[in-house]
Length: 88
Image: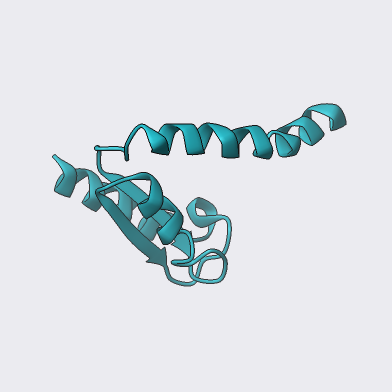
């Protein structure tokens, strides 16, 4: 179990290479939602998402940290529903 966990984090370098290759082909065309908890990532992830996709919407869930679904389930669900509704 530990080995699998270590390999997951070691793969970040491969992921980075794959992301650069993908972006070189062009940004994602579909709508992308970046969500961060107010007490964790917040809006800091938005520039990364914007580097990968053309149509990005960023949302910050108030009174939440890393575990958005557990900490603010209604706000998280409403954010997803609003994004899907607006993206149709």
